[in-house]
Image (cartoon, rainbow, N blue to C red; front, side):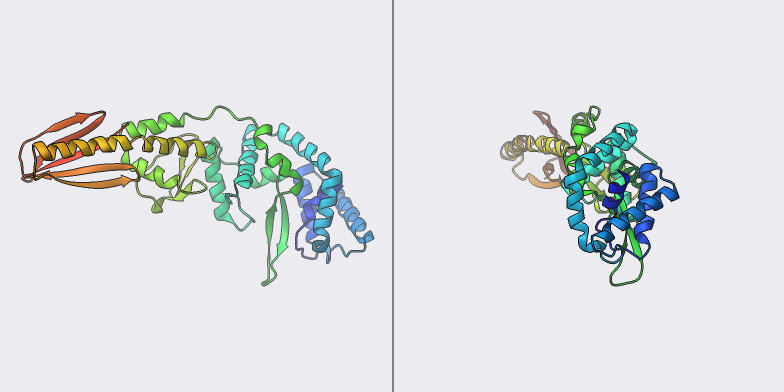
Length: 339
């Protein structure tokens, strides 16, 4: 089992001279608690088997990677998958959450997870999404995924410059598990995001609604704070905010987005009612009424009304509020709506 896993670990990497030995041993230590001598024996066996096929283990490995990977998947894929599932079942709840989010990242091609050890920004985004989704903090996601077997660390040599990096590679034989990760990792009930959205709308928290509208238009649900208009605060397992970024839970992202825009769509009829009221005011009481509309965010508007009349009028209609108040010799009307 360790021999097959070691071979699978090595596939696809462009290696330095001593990298095969180094990386097979490194991955084996995390996965199987191997000692140096046992890791060396596995390496020697790998090298011997490949050289018997007529290849130079160090120089030609990348040429036969796909062929060997296919053989391993066909002949040993079930064994490898069973081993990974056993590890997953024995993992802690936090470790399972990490695996779940990683597999969702693969499924939806969100590209949050870092591609190598130099991609610190990607790791930062993944950790932010992990906190937003499960409130999991202060964990080493790389070590966790290597230990359970969902990534391997392979040393890649740059072809155009000196140096190398550790690539994080997903084993191809785990695609059937990753594509149905909900089947293998049950999750608790999601947070009540509808109540959160309803509260924002009913209390007219415009700054947060603006921010959410922009955030929901990001494919991965993560945005830089300085590129958003509005303000937002963290909500456990719904929204997570750092000094530089804000993220929405990947678990509820799609349903959250659907409900948010359903609520916005329901305001179209209310908007028509407000415009009808303003038209009535102009026709019956204020022929010189001036009306301008400001869009606070897509689907949420504020009507600013100016009149030379000094009378104060307040109109309430179907949850909408329009009020007039004297300001610097003119009457200013501010109308807001909530559904």
